[in-house]
Image: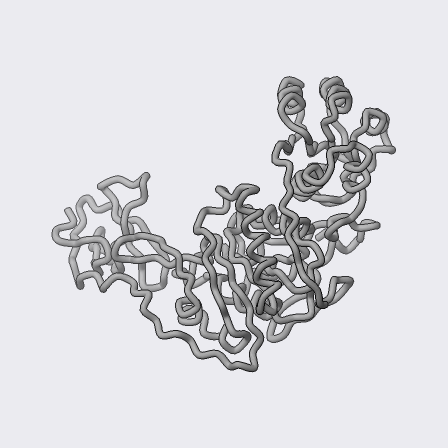
Length: 420
């Protein structure tokens, strides 16, 4: 059906009076032999059903992608930053001959792909691992935190962590809690769309992240597109950001807070933020991994919560409204308190804060020892509880730390303009 055409070849498919021309791509694992996938010259992929079609091979595949780029030349006057690779769309390149996706992470490769970075800083790179962000674990968080601290205590003026977007806010908030005495900026960055697509956000995000790495900021932040167009990037505090859309380039939003700044030609910081200083950074990687994130919903079985009480040292509830649960869960929560399992309440609404004194259900939960999560995002409370229980499992000490803002995760009062 395809004749001599092979993956990577340039082909033309003539079907129904229409012509489709581009690079023959490998089929996905769910594909079938009745269709071909072609990467058009505009960068987008289309699938074409090839029965009753004529396929012409126009040119053989080009040589596989080569990593042999010359070492970039940097101005010695520029600050040095380290870019750590952990995987994700931003740190990969597609070989159209084989269809393989492999890391593109030497300094030479990155500067070749985004030459504007050389105008911002001297770039040093290190690939820690190359995994999909859904496969991130607390062990990966610990390694990233330790490597970031090592770089910050060396020559790095700032550190950029390239990460897959799906769980980036988890890892970023974990580092915000684990990195102590932070004196320089740590920027998490990713891309919603791969670099082979015309609409890729990878280059602008990476340039903006490098600029923030050279700024006076000394916090862990996430830098991503602020608008769907290539205009500016927003700087989000790591403990206040969430991915709010599966595919938009401006998917990341600050929740219950305003962004710390924006990046266009220059970095603009506003509001209250930690400033660059001197001193040694260290990573406190103690984490209690036996923590559950439990979503409350109509009809939820008490058996699920009983299971968590039996097996975990901490539970973060994603409750309804101001911080409520159905009555059938109350006995399990009472037993959690008796058995020393810390329970923290957050809200499914994401925006707003928990206030468990308003209604009788909330007051009952307070009497059972549930700790209000204030305006923390559920996933941030989850990561924070892991961190706090790694430090202490004394209930009063856990309660005190959970109610105190350790990395900007709790705001003193809700801001009206933070809901948008």
